[in-house]
Length: 59
Image (cartoon, rainbow, N blue to C red; front, side):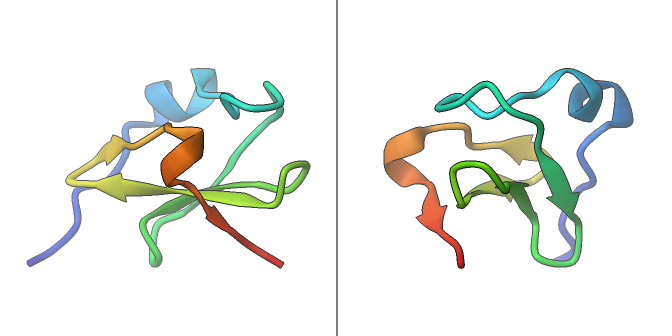
């Protein structure tokens, strides 16, 4: 099953819910990454899951 893309207009307004910093979108991984917090928020069917408690830590 192919993952739906997150619309560019949505990406332009999204911010990390923890630090309010900018996010980078990794379409191949279906994740939004915050470099400040070192968190990755998953994207399911084009919908970002922006819950800090469900984010995974990155390096």
